Length: 222
Image 1 (cartoon, rainbow, N blue to C red):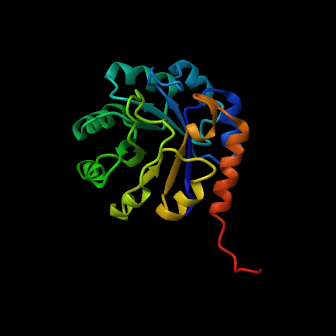
Image 2: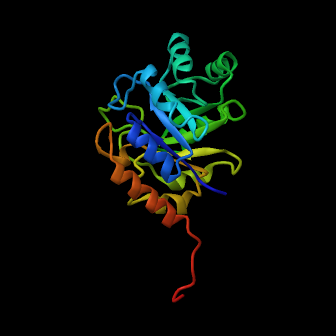
Image 3: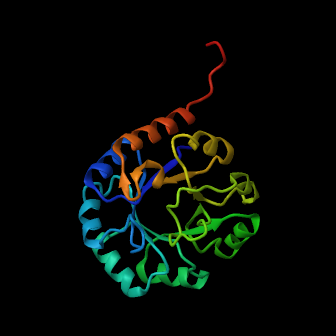
């Protein structure tokens, strides 16, 4: 099965176009004002129109109010809402009912106990995203460029659909894919030349590394 690839925190037409060209299946816009990747919903909507229908458009929010979501859903018209805060299962159900959109629920992971929280959301969230817990002092729930112990994901039920996030880059994506067999991968800081600044060259290098990692193994000496 082909691995889904999400490029998150996009802010420019050039980066969006390259992500599409290289095979991204999802693009993410971040609506968390403390993030260097924050974008206004109306700007995100205009950029998303470039690729609408060709990739899944994801709105990344952190403990949003209904007013927040009203604006984002109206202006962006996303395909998926990614909830990256402390939203309860009940809140996830409410958001799905109000907006009629699938929800990807993010979890910050450091230990197996963090993954046990997923159980309460199974059958409620449509997909999960596993990111590393933020380093001490960070105000950002994601996009910190740090990873977690991927072997923890072996605890998961094989039917849990998720995206792997947290510190992925061209240097470690092959190991991440090999170890986890993740159905989807999510990259943000790993394709940036500075916080919030996507690099076209780094996007290319990341996709090159993914393609190499996903190639069937060939017999030695062939």
